[in-house]
Amino acid sequence: MNPKTKILVLLSLFALATTALAQQVDMGSEANEGVTIDSIDDGLAAEDRLLQEFERYRSLLDEGAIDEADASAKRIVAMAIRIFGPESLQTAKALNNLAIVQSRSGQNDAAIQNFESAIEIIEDVEDRLNAQLLNPLKGLGSAQLNSGRPELALRTFDRARHITHVNDGPHNIEQVEILESLAESTLRAGDTEGARDVLDRIHVLNARHFENNVLGLLPSLMRRGDWQHRAGYYNDERATYRRVIRIIESRLGKDHSSLLAPLRKLGESFYFVDLTKSSPYKAGVAPSGEVYFKRAVRVAKSAPDLHWSERVSAELALADYYTYAESDNRARAIYAEMWELLSADEERLQTRARLLEQPYLLVQKPLPSYVSSGAAKNARKENLITGTIRVDYTVSPRGRVRNLRTEAIPPEFTDMQRMVHREMRRRVFRPMMANAQPQITGNQVFEHSFFYRQADLDKLRKNAQQPAGEPLPVEAEQPTEAEQPAETADTAS
Image 1 (cartoon, rainbow, N blue to C red):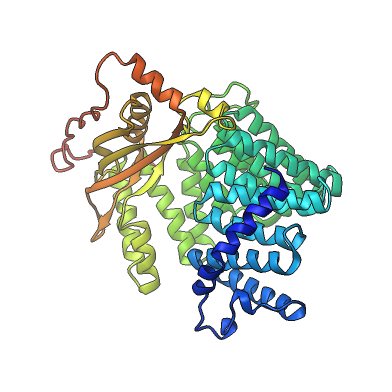
Image 2 (image 1 turned 120 degrees about the vertical axis):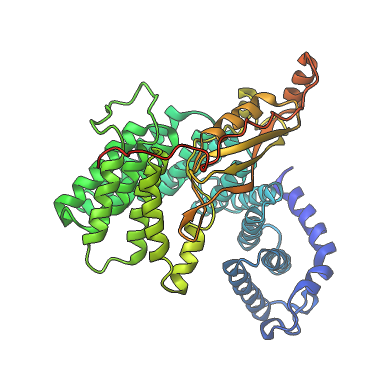
């Protein structure tokens, strides 16, 4: 559909919606008293009304009032078309704002259509390399990614990157946000090597930009470590966090509180094994992350004027490591101490409820978003269907998953079901606490959504050798903690 046809469709839709939208405006608000679409006059007064409505839209969006913001955005589009015409930059901006709120509310198909309309208007009014294309292109790529089409998002973000090169040069720092989205799309498309290449480009840009400000490089290095973790390059991740630690030690001192985050991240990286062959870094001599968690606790206790929440985070990270390592006596002692620390006042009680009064997931690995490589590669060509794996489970006082039961919808996707089943069985949680003691927590539910093509489902049904769809059986009951022999000894500190 070309831009003019799309605008004609929009005009028809908004003409039909005008009355309903006017009724959706909060007529009790002084800013909107007496305002209807029919009351908008030509000229300055109409533009003032438009600006007023735009401020209202931004306020609603900031407050998280998505339904009201959606109605306001539609009203703005109708006003922009009435005042400036369907093929104007103002209408393009209004469509972009509408698409933003639709994307936030999960209306990805509608958001994609409106982002594309905004892009086409700007191309028609300006050109295909205009900098005003960046916002709708970034929004379009995000909506495509959220709808399970990373291949489409790759093309969109790459075009946005090219536009920044044309307008601001190949080394502009503003493109980093786009490159991070490009890395996310590449990673979701299953190309970890490609994602790593994009991360390297981001690092080169940041290193160039912060050449004379090494401390200014730290936030980008922390993001780099996070991306390396998500891509599975755990040895690279460790090298990045070690570099952050060295910079802080050399510039700020070996006991500075800014060491807490990289020390925790470095410790957590040892929960995972790097299976990549291309990493130039070798695993360190430390067999686990315990030494880094302990050092973070020492820094937290010695740092002057450190907020209590930072100490809690450091202590819980060490306790979580002991839960992971099944050193339960040590873990319980720290959890109990933190329970008491977080019981002092109302603010701390709220933190206690969030961190200790419910199971808290500690270790997980990503699950695939597609049932087949064909579904991922052909996302741009075919309509994808969403399937679900439902998991019911219990978390034991030792943070392990028990009484695990999974079910696939549609039931034919047993391979995906088994994959989710295995991953859930490996997960480790911080157990729920009550009265400073870990508890068993039942009736836990997790749902994993995935994308498939109708052809994938048809093939499974055709090749089925026996009726599919029976849920995997409940795992054999594990002995309760009361039935387990008491822990006799922990490893030495």
